[in-house]
Length: 206
Image (cartoon, rainbow, N blue to C red; front, side, top):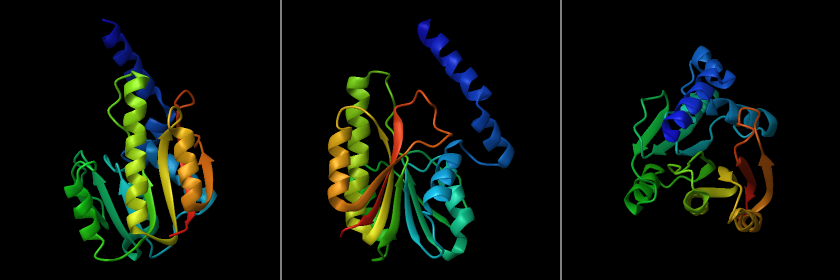
C-alpha cells in the first residue's frame, strides 16, 4: 500500500512539475533538456563541428538539444539500454553500456575520431536503498570516465551526473587528477531534494 502511495505522490509531483510542463510545451522529451541547456548557456560547452557522445541518452532530451545546437555541423553519438526514437543528426546505439560489446560498438562508431565532449546522464534503476543505489550510480560514472579517457582529445570535456554520497569525493579527486579543472553544477531544473549534481571536468590532460 505504501508503495502505491509513493508512486501516486511521484506521479503527482511529476505531472505538477513546472519543468515537465515546459518540456511538453516546448516539444522536448524530458525535463533534463533544461539542465543541459543551463549548463551550456553558463559554461559554453557546445561549439560548431564538435564530436559528442551522449551516454544514458533515452528518451532523448539531451540529444535533442545537441541536435538543435550542433546539427549537421557536429557528430553526435548517443547510447542507452532503453530504446530512443530517432533524432536528426544523432546516431543511436541501443545496449547496456556496462557490457564490453556496447563499448566496442561506440568506439567503432567513432571511426578513429576523438571526441570533444562526453556527457553522461546515466543513472541506475533506483531501489530506494542508498546502500545498493549509490555503488551502482558510482560504477556508471566511473565507466563514463573510463570511456572519456579512451575517446577524448586533449583539452576535451566530460559532464557527468553524480549522486553525492559514498565514493563521490574519491571520484572528484580522480577527475581533478585527469582534467585541468572540475566544476560542480546544480541546475535549476534539478529537484532540490535530489542528491544529484553535475560535475563538469574541463581540459582533459590526455
